Image (tube, rainbow, N blue to C red; front, side):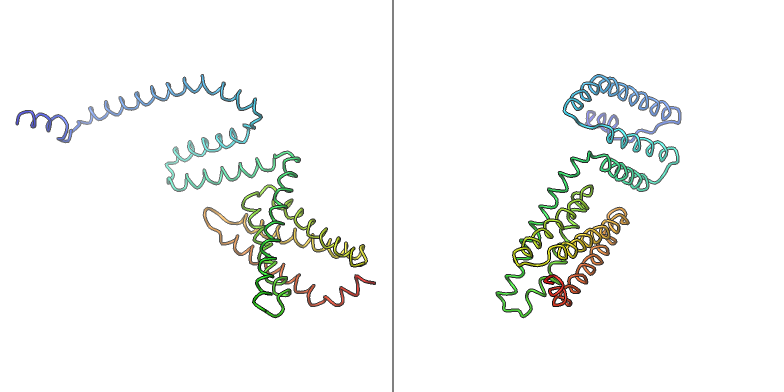
Length: 268
């Protein structure tokens, strides 16, 4: 019984501190914290230079990491001094990370951007060919009248703008380049087919050139609206996608409506 009572008195009963005791306890905890931080600092000062050498040896660019770290440190210091709301601090850090990420994208060497654009463009071609062909075949199989028109004016804009949205989200630094590669491959396909049919190639190049530019314009529209989104909201991204799809569909519908006139133009 005595042992149980002693345990209760020593560990369970709430300790009532005097003001002086609270001050001494707080001071002790602060000192322990400073000692721990000094230990971490000493270990880091020994390990970090070696780690940096290894990273530099393998060609890792550390400047974006340094810039982001400085931004976060500055935000934490300022917001701590101002006693800011933790949620506001978190949002400020998120914006700093995004800002520095965008800056690092801009600093990517041109050869890397070209490589990413080629990869992205080929991915877009793959997506477009697979899905456009699949839907067209499905419409034909179902016996839907005007399968070509539906596929070209509705399905193609949805599929191709979705592919652009995928690039803008996954490869933002090479999204426009990927779109240009995709549009160029599409135009080349038309030129090869046109040459085999004996069309006027300069005229076809002119028309497909307009198509390439229009592809890039709709990608720019999507990228612009995505850039207006904040935090976890995707409202502007969805608006931009819908506008791009409508623009793309309007272009394809115009080409379909004036198909006979364009055919005469290309064969004269």
